[in-house]
Length: 529
Image 1 (cartoon, rainbow, N blue to C red):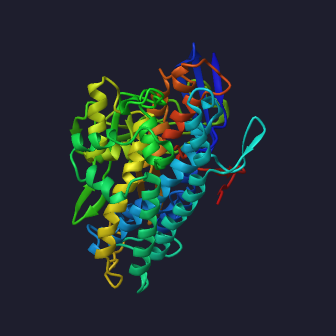
Image 2: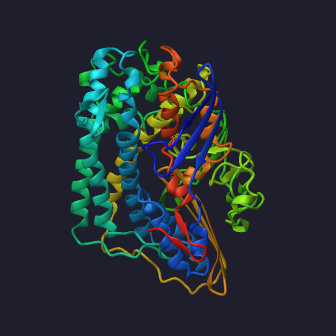
Image 3: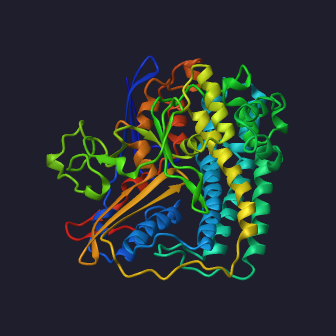
């Protein structure tokens, strides 16, 4: 049987998922981004800094990430080898708040509303269902024509997300712009006081969401060892839902690992045996706190090598063969030359050393050997379960928020608003440059090439391009999974394939980033703002 989910709601951009199922199990999945990727065409013939600035308009969720990736490419064009320490510290603070703000958005606005899907009404105990409705119902939500008030946690999260963005604005103004040689802003004299105040409020909010003081959690997970961190999680109270925080509640009910019989089995869905990739995050004195690297599902680590990144268009609506991004092109095929079926999406297929990779919080924390996520990964492997799952992706986002908050405290205390935030770059001395940045969703790369001082080629590989690519980890995570609640335990309802939706949304796909939006009126091509 074929199930078509089009469009997928609560994800960024237009996305269509085709599932071929047998007895409620996905046998084949095809994820299609349905809008043309055209921004690279728009950037050709522009002055390089103007081109890099234009990329911040790709996505409303992560303009900061695109700004820093674009700035990295500009640094290479200008021969900038290192940035002032104050600039690196400022970037860490911005990235930390960006992670928190984006992860809150994903969890509360995009994924947790799945927990109040009507599929769960009759399959979990009423006390738990009532608690989920009370917390996670989105605005204007109805079940069988009955209006459901917005969840109290949902509304609280909106405020927390806003505070994270206000912290970035306090440090960088209304917009972070790509600039070679550092950061193009001057913090206010009282920004430290404001940042400390916002940080305190954000962390108090995260403690409330967690249900445990954030310092206690960090001491027993991030500052512990893998075995101790897992033990701490498994020792959480599993009985009184009303006294649990949101994150604690999800950790307890989400997986069979925690010991509840009525768990949601999310450790068994959205699984794959592919690879993980990170370019590293949070630079301190030239060393990444979250190290860059490439890791197998057996947790075998290898150093990161940017030269091993390629893209192919075999199943995408573009011409061209597999190539490194510097040699890549964005050439849409004419409609009458497309072999529909063989080609089904506007997303290209990035690979690392020819391998399919997952990027994002789970990949970052696994490669960084963060104790809680590493400990859970080892525990699942002992149980002969895959490392990657819906449960692990969400727990990784939760943990990364808390770790970022912990690190932010030290960075804010070190920050000097009167520091040196940029060096004067040399004139253009190179014709090629690239910038890599860990956006909240994963590895983001910009590659730029110049001819006669203007852009001759600009290629962008976003996190969603990695995860949602043809034959990529999202498709492989869907294949083999059941489509309905609790692994089809209570029947198959093809009109409400909630597990398939859980899986897709666990990657937090941003198709606006992956394909971009353009309007074509023959000539010229005009960029939508």
